[in-house]
Length: 67
Image (cartoon, rainbow, N blue to C red; front, top):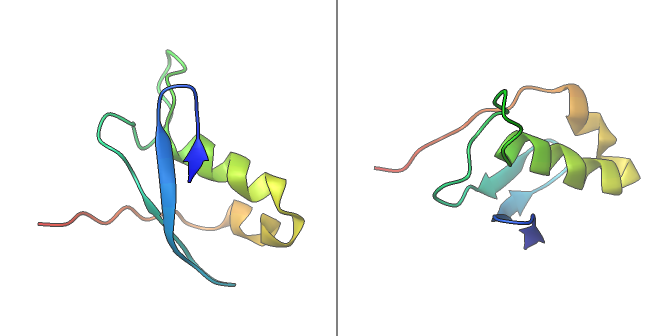
């Protein structure tokens, strides 16, 4: 589990091509003008910490929802 001051996200699945993250309630998906914590920033921070995962950095982020 990866932590931020207010929120945490967990990685449900990860391989060389994709990363599936569990976004907790209350955590925004993308940045806003007020600088609130968001999933995109947290995932990017996680990927920067692990050099071999940097190739994810310029790829598309897709958000799926469950019914």
